[in-house]
Image (cartoon, rainbow, N blue to C red; front, side, top):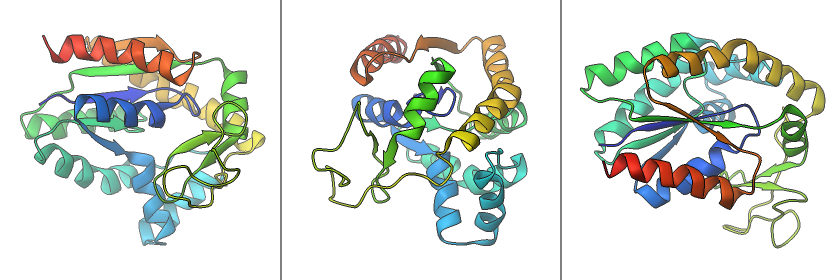
Length: 220
């Protein structure tokens, strides 16, 4: 079973690439952000706590994320198809928890892909991002607009900006990322599974570079 993780700062295109990779390689896409947002939308006790951190641009605490995402990861691994993890882990503590979970299930992380994008480009991407609340597909007002303004191509749902996609919150999210999430890259670099890619190209250009690498690993 092939398991991988895709990483990168907010706006790097992790979700878009993870969806495409999952489709190409026959893996299950598990986005921690979707899991957490679903809890927030359902206004569960965990979701209420998470909302306070998300709206201020801060990371949701490790124990809270793990409680919401851990069971989903285990369930996905039990499907036998392998997974593309997106948005988890974000801290070294979470990374260690994930390693422990995989070890208990006699599984391993085969690849960790990191997408590198300059901060100002990330800001532009996020300020102009539109998301479908039904299928979670992501658009950009200029670079990747929907065929019909404000409407998802896939299901016709009305597109919306995320509450945390404003410049002040975005800059705080990037600061938090560099402070807390980049050490996770060092963790996986030491484990010999990290590969970094330039995420500044088009969606297709980035995808082809990443998927060629993954196919070489998967076929090895």
